[in-house]
Image (cartoon, rainbow, N blue to C red; front, top):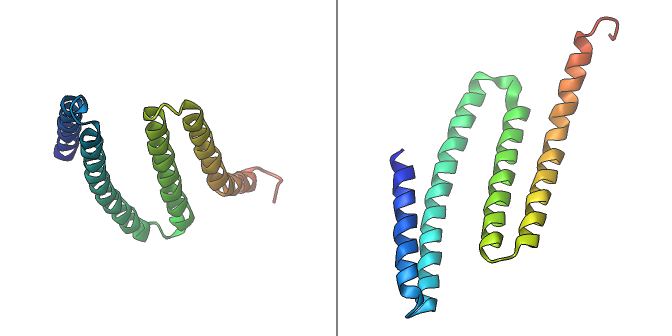
Amino acid sequence: MDELLRTIGICFLAGFMALLLKERSPSIAMLLTICAAALLLSQLFTSIQLVMGMIQRFSVYLPDMDLYIGTLIKVLMVAFIAETSSHLLKGANQTLMATIVEWSGKIFILMIALPIFYELLQRMLVLLPGTH
């Protein structure tokens, strides 16, 4: 919770300062925004590393779930990258490119998740009577 409040505070502070500086020096305002974004992304990647460590620790208790956990991590990373890229493109007034990135992310997630869907279908077919 503290990290979320700190992130929101940094965003508001950097945004407000960039708005104040935009009229006098647009290049410094842009540099401030880029530096704040880089700081926040580095903190975010640290949090993602912690989450991935927790997921790997959980996988010790669920040895059969390696495929699922690996796929979950891939899907989360694709979703994160696609969403972040899409918002950056929308901020740059590139809505068509943002839509293409969103759709590409969804297609990649579908491609990553199809093997799990296939395996689940196979397991369900084994449960049906007369399909051995």
